[in-house]
Length: 473
Image 1: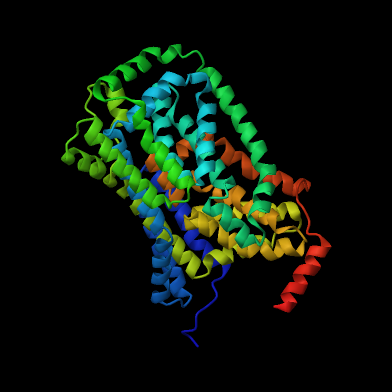
Image 2: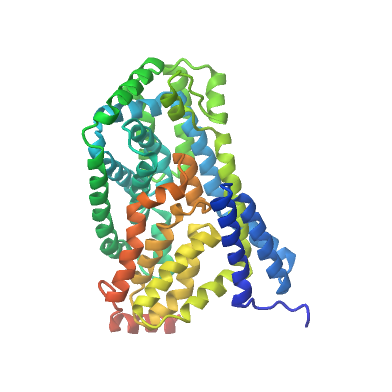
């Protein structure tokens, strides 16, 4: 009996979480170092707590491996995005997008335009990652050239990219949330309009107000001209170079999986580098491996275009592996479930139920470092509480997306935050204050929970029908 596995109590489940918070605060906040080591140490603490509660090492190891396995497709995409950025810069594709973007967009409307462009692309592709890795990279360069702080630009990109990730029927999370909650896809999307549309309008207003500060463009006219002239003199610029990003977007819209679509984009980038930029095969392979190294002699342009490559993503890959090792142990040994269940004890009304769901999803994103876990576990834990209050399942699925999907890119060690930080070249903590859609949406959802606005109940006929179907099964 002494070797019997114990159910982990809340006080024990909190130990790894509290350790992680303190370790991250000291390492990232005070020492200004990366979060990898604190995550490894937190995983060790979680393993020790699990062992003390009679969980065998094989189960702990299996949890770590399973957690990492969940992110393998994301890791592969991240690696390919690194090669894509490298070949697209070397092939003149990103420089062309930056060149025409600087010609067309003015500082006053740039942030609003960035939000809308990224929204359209992500809505059509269903992928925030593909959006950030293609048009997002170019928009960072355009914003930099217009003199707009890069964290602001990144915040607008994130808001637009995650608008589509949340609302597109092609998105994996948009399909996962209703499946977990027990509703259908299009009821879920329609119900999300109530929280997403106000958040989107608020974002447009805020980006418009910020943009007014940069209207006129006089503060960076000389800088823009320098960038345009330098790019034109070092790269062949032509509208045909816009073909690769267009083709990648079309492939994703046509439901070709992101990995082959992005790999095709990498190959096209290499082809254009050979054909239009007179690169050697060695230079193209180096760009895919270590990134493009810009040597124009203009510091502003060199900082902008020295990017990409498979190797540039390895730090982020390591971060994802460390974070999901910790999350995998917490999930497999039941500690995440214990934490989620503790929230239910404090739920007394619909508002507190919605708030508990929202904060649980955000907490899971921080603890488990994976948005899928942040949707599935709270969804599983809170489903009965929503059913008991006769709240329609689409209320739960909306809460899961309003928080689980939208908070994931705001946490640096989350797989989504790590990807966005690496792809856009901006720490998530820096763009967080400007990701207006991601910040506003959960707050509006909580407001609806406490006021009862849009919190639809299940029709009694639906309940009777459901009970009849369950009995028949």
